[in-house]
Image (cartoon, rainbow, N blue to C red):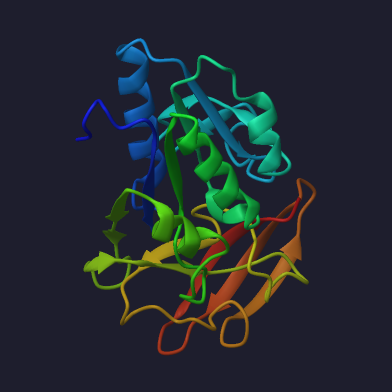
Length: 225
């Protein structure tokens, strides 16, 4: 894809939830390992859905990673002989992740970044717009709309822990989100138009009965811890 004389560059993999972003990130990183290139992988510590020490996709593709609290920590941990750096869930970092990616690229490192380009309301998410602007390559993936089956570019929030309904950052998977197309996406569902009754159980899981506009009652589960 890229000429060998390029000293360093940034690749972005973006799209909605369940579009295969992390799976594609892991695929590229493993190919680099097969090519005997030194690879290091980082993710925000807040993302511990599947494993604290792996970048892992929804379909269980995974690779070892280092969780970091801030993007600046990545620069402290990248070793001199590292040729490829992977960064997953970049939308959870602040704007400094853009400077980190730029510095690594200027050092001759191939930087592969995966993240959500839109939040649950369908608005640009965190540092992703700037990362898209400064990158050499952008791959935008789509999922399948769970309502109509069309290509999906949005992440529909179905539920959120009490008190976090309006928060942009609520880490979850199929228990809280599903993929939707532009026309089936409801930006305010889960905030104003999603009516929920939650019952706390002994294991910290709330079983939620929710009503969407124009649809019947359906059960959903969201982890409260």
